[in-house]
Structure formats: C-alpha cells, structure tokens
Amino acid sequence: MNEAKRIGDELRAQGDLADNQRIRETSAESAAHLDSNRERDTAVANSNITEMNKADAAKHQLTAQKYSADWTNLEQYLMGRQYKLEKEKARQKELEEQLSLLDTKESLLGNT
Image 1 (tube, rainbow, N blue to C red):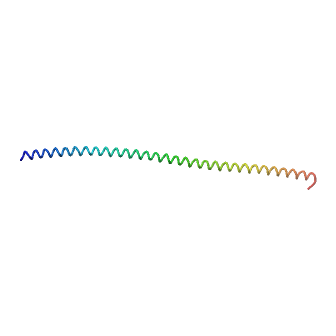
Image 2 (spheres, one colour):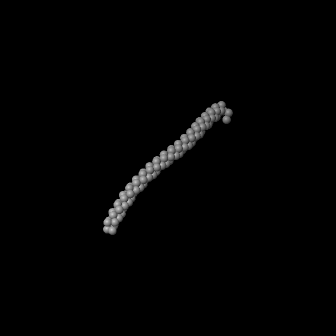
Image 3 (cartoon, helix red, strand yellow):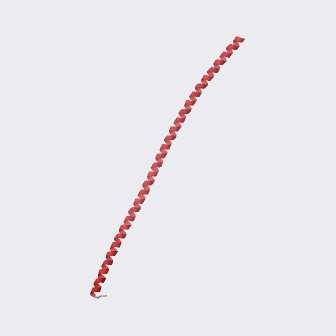
C-alpha cells in the first residue's frame, strides 16, 4: 500500500509538473500573440494617423490655393477698376482742359 501511494504521488507530481510546463508554454504563446497583436495595432494606428495627416495637409493646401485664387481674382478686378477710373479721370481732365482752352479762346475773341 505504501508502494502504491508512493507511485501515485510520483505520478501525480509528474502530472503536476507536466501541467505547469504546459501552462508556461501556453502563457508564453499567449504573450507572444498579444505582443504581435499590439505591434500590428500600433502599426495600423500609426499608418492611419499618417494618412489622416496627409489628408489634412492636402485639404489645407487646397483651401490655401482657393483663397489665393480668390484674392488674385479680386486683385485683378480691382486693378481693372482702378485702370478704368484713372483712364476716365485722364479723359475728364483732357475734356476740362479743352473746355478751358475754348473758354480762353472765346474770351480772347470777345464772345463771352
């Protein structure tokens, strides 16, 4: 009976050792999978952040180009208006000079 108990205890101890070994192996595998998943998640997140930053930069670039085009159009419009006003002012001055010259001629001729 003592012999059977000793053999049983040895077998139980061997089983416990085998269980502990298998638990360590599966724990190591599980940790490796978790690390791999974390690395993959981090890589995907970093890639997503990079792509979002690129999209934001492109959006801001397009907005800047739009504002630049808008201001260029406004500037060209205002320059055209300024040119027309200066041309009209010069024409008006020329007419005034001609009228003044005619008035002077009439005065000299005594037709006033």
